[in-house]
Image (cartoon, rainbow, N blue to C red; front, side, top):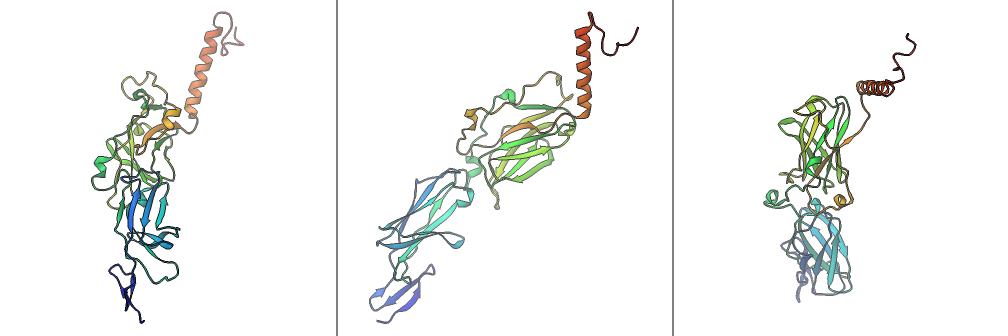
Length: 295
């Protein structure tokens, strides 16, 4: 019998002859587990056809290329998506065709929407509030002038854009694309103008961007500034094992880390303190280093 190609509504070709259309029935599609998928998690797209020994292909809206293809022994194809990122969010559909008669396609499945936790309409309000990962007493970092330090923003945001902000100073904003779970913002030769409260947040890279909630602020105190600044501040809190167990969707956390040693002026000040201490120890029977050779 003669056959002719007749495109269906989605552009795939059905073959029509005397016996009717040669398009396979559309498959069904679903996500397992269903619902929102956490960043870094795993989800499986399941596509079930009406025939066995077919070749199944997975597509994503906006991408003309095949994402995955499988040839299951039965009528169920599974397409795992591991280490889910923001780029995986979107609508998926699948097709299948006969392995021997490549020109006979199924009609497309319905679309299924993969939503990554924290995305989609209203996602800004649905993102979790900042997680207090450290005691409130450890939220201040004290550094002397001319020293160098870095502010580290920790988040489950690989591939996202991370923004560091300083309260009350829009000109101090800095942005960086994350290659991992930690983004570092160095501050060379800390000055009094660097003192203040810092926070960070991350966003998707597409327009309009979807933002996380900001981290808890961390205060940078430059020596000699602010009421009572001479009183000792607690040292930055070191990460304990429990703080390395990340909850899904956790917002960023800031810490302060010293990068280089003290300045030359600070070295001289420490030397004077050492000499004063030696004089105090030897004042009752020994001469101070500065008095030797006199008399």
